[in-house]
Image (cartoon, one colour):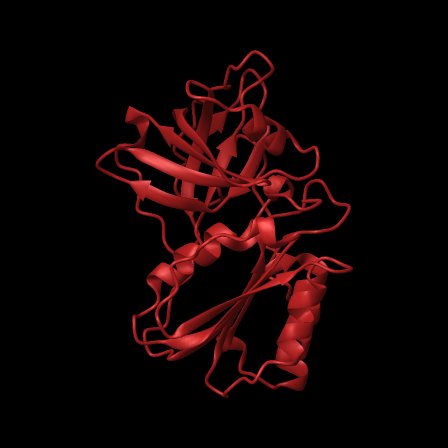
Length: 280
């Protein structure tokens, strides 16, 4: 994502377009929704709230889960897939532009879904979000994925940049009240900082970006005082994620099950693949 969720989020090898995963369940058509509220969070981040009767039955997203956002065309129309003879989905009018996001909040009773957008670069989703207003249309697939919080984990070290703020917020809300830990967040500057729902024993520290994206997080990770039982969750630029993961597993010798890393975007790459766990 130059720095934007436009280049995708956790994904991976996908089946050919219009087909379901081999041996897996057939995909549900994306839910048609419209914008009901747009609110700035920082100069470079927007909260967009979607609503629609189609959100009835939408599953409560797990912490750090993702959705697929299908964008409208230049006329504001969202392509609709149809089920072929085999039940698989096909796009007769062409598959729309799609990006992956972490949903920030879902209200089942009101049937609303809040998504945060980083406004950076010139990607299609950032452009759409910057112009979105009540009545703007889109479609949503998912939710999928997510992170299972180990209830026995008493200590946490969490790191991320602007692209990871929604995921980190959902993760913090899922932590037990009695955990201790640190959250380190990298952003362009003080104006990009927002409040997060951290438990009382978790200290949140912000770092202004200086130099390469993720460099401040990697440096802080190297200097961290980590107990052997600390659980790690880091999501930011893909190259920085790999440096942090290599250090934590190679030099600090932390057990792999305690280290979760996600490359949400990569410098200079417009369509970073989903499901980048930084493991290569």
